[in-house]
Length: 405
Image (cartoon, rainbow, N blue to C red):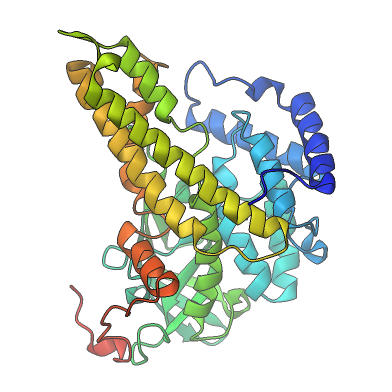
């Protein structure tokens, strides 16, 4: 494992850092209060346009589609430097991180020429329409159907947990086009206009107070066959491109997420009947455990970065990191709120305890997004440890013969 940049990487990092310092001054500190949605969108669009003009978008994408044609390490270096700021990027994380790479990998050249440049500039927002009420972790069990009529497809069905669908212009949607084929072989993916007739988006109010997730309903929505991604029946293969990028996008620790140092500050400020909570052995043990997990995650991710720096393909680091990160965040936050007792419900805005409260509410979703803990443990068990795979009796069964749970 190598913790140091190569000379070329160090040069690029210095270049990026200088640009960040010159252009992100307004984002160097956390906003005094959370942005309202319209304000958040405006800031995201402005920051994306600024990055585009400076050549810091599509860093690893081919130059032929408007990217920079650089290595994954260049993207990682930019992400690391950008993470020093509070610059808003969430509006484009799905589209640029997952959707557009699928579009230019599997779409027709004219489709890529139409959509990629506008996405890079931030002029159009994208969402990923995969999960359904009865098909979350088992994505191949989706029931949203697409029926061909001439040179168009008619889509009917429902998706759920679609991030920023209510602010998106386009989405990639995977549908079932053959109910008599086995579940992995009867799928096809399309680009859908989120403003098309028959598309209805309903926001989902979360316990954290946010509402970035949505239900999306399709009623006789028409999509041209030219907007199909990949061949008919190869939607699972196309989806794997998207899911690969999704794992990379959600595998790391969220920006500015609280860690062991936050827990230490909170424990120092809580008074118990026997003195400060930080002096209790059980509290110190929990802080030490969180520190070990945080350092383990950092070192595991350094292994992936070292592999990328040498031009190699990382191993299972992202799956391992995500399983540990989500559980560590949830356990640490839960412990802090229990320690605070009643104060864990009524917290001061901007306080460390509020950060931990937000982390607690978000961690449950993180254990689902990008692959549930159970799915990722299966991947690690089967592909890393070489253990026998799960029994999958429906793998070769025609989907029409599978009864929904």
